[in-house]
Length: 292
Image (tube, rainbow, N blue to C red; front, top):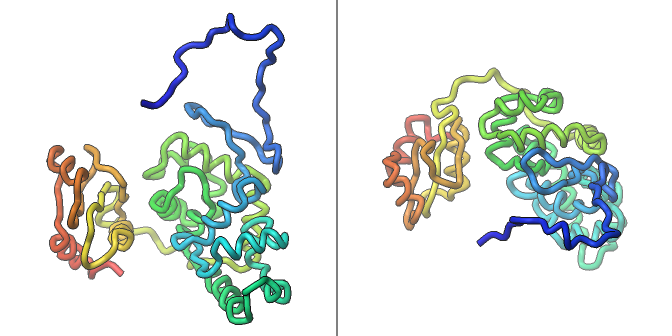
């Protein structure tokens, strides 16, 4: 059972008790503190900049589904933080300027340093969806990042979007729309974004949007697939315009069920939702050239 507050006994409150006032700005980085309506927690909006969020922001930014900087693991990050070389994610793209310092890190030889520098350079060519996901905006997972990229097409358009425009994006609810808007209104975040772009991060210009065959449909992938991992299956569905969810609901269009599909398959059958086995899924994808 999840604990909840059911009653406040004001009569037991000490006479000298003072009202608690939430800070309007983060005590660490001075970014605005936000608490969307319906949320119980106030949070700092300076996700890219705030020192208190630095380690997790960097870990997320370099992860495989984001900028995918192979080799920049926890050991490197901790050493670089200790040397004060990483104040935010944009500093990653200036590490080549500190090559001599990197070579002096214990057990980090010439090859390790060069591999890291090469991986950082390679990560500069990415996609808008990966970049948005890498920013670590609360509520914006891989699927939502792709929807935002498809909807707004450019980073400038996304940055300028208000809450109402954001809410029209598939997979973006009221609270997530507020978190996105708050993120792009925080000056410190914009500073880091500008530095990332100045360092050379780029992606291909958007192409004219076309209606995709699964546009807006909600799909679920569950169980073990022999021919591909669930991540790959998800990417193929997203390339066709589908929203891939982690749970089955009445809004689910189809469930792709591999071996040991479990409760999600059971729920889909109870709701009379279409189910594809792996072979049917592969034949379905073959209609679209397998989806590269």
